[in-house]
Length: 516
Image 1 (cartoon, one colour):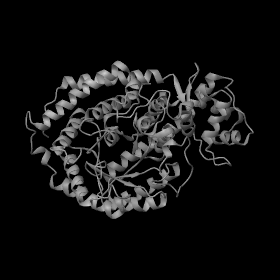
Image 2: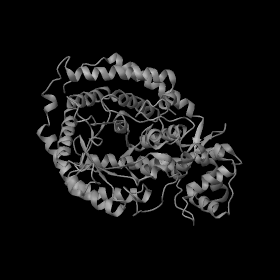
Image 3: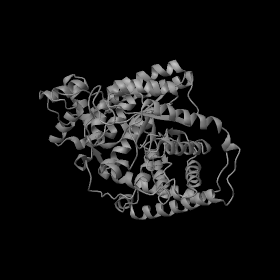
Image 4: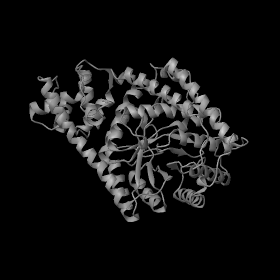
């Protein structure tokens, strides 16, 4: 593959700045937990279901512990101590608290409670490890498509209709099915329960919906002779809980960004940084590939002028991912083909940006997003834009390719629109399969010079962010030209200072020793 001439020293310095930025945030946030981290922990201990008012039992328990001023000690040992004292399962404890027949208290023997809690947590870790091993075995047995993987969305609002569309998409050639989440779910501070049929613009992320779609894709994958990956949205106020449910049900990818919720959903900074660490830790342990959201920056900021903010954010996301135990092949760092099509040489700049990202992250599972911002009702021009996007993707060896739709600006794509998108991508990927090994980038040419400019700007802005701190940088609108403050946004009330004896068993079980 042809390579751009880039200054490795600049890359190393930029990455070092990103590492220090991420570590500073991690150290500051380590003294806190959140209500949704504790709810996710309870789910990982086996608690599920709803009460008579349809309130999820993890919420009931965490609300109970907050009311008793106990949550800062960690929900897990308190619940496990109650399990032992009353000879109950975790689910039975939750149901008893919900009915008002049991009041939780600190364990009488803290050391014994910790040991018992670790043993309970190990049961779920064993299940998740088993799901990861099963995925690996399926891929080994059935095989998988070559990259770029074709990533296609379904978004009917009804999980049973989603299943029908997902099967059809896989049979038409999709390698990854992403179930779009119902509008607004990221701002719900609870996870809906059971199979759902009434989402708006997408289908609610629930554990039962995960289970139904996973079974459907396993079945169609057996028929087609290749493993079909399943994706959902691990973001918003319930990020850790959705990570837990996805790990339990063997999802393969999760949209999981360190700053997306802050910038685009106005979720509190502290809440997001704490939740993303725990959720990514679970994703890492489960072998799930995360998808980050830098592509979204280019929907509000200019894709040419803001290209360096994408690379800077990717480097920060990479370092947050390492802190949570994720390996490079689990990092679906995002970027997008969003330059104004009227810009002269825009295709060259898109090529420069995509190749730059590929070389800075040679081992990452890069996720490349299609044109959206500049799509119009002209479906013929849209098809051309998507074709150019497909060319850049295969020439620069992207890994995860979200299919562009010619009707992007008109409506939620129909099955036939998706079929045309798959045909377009397959044609380009086939006819240009080895083009990247047949061409060379001109030394000192426009593409190489543009990539070098973006890299230099990235090094500079990361040094500035390191000096002021990430929170201040977000406050200045550094990313996506949207400003947020540390005390603003939704969910701050769910951030809890840890007590000296706080305990959660999952970090020591899921994280590599050197990170825990």
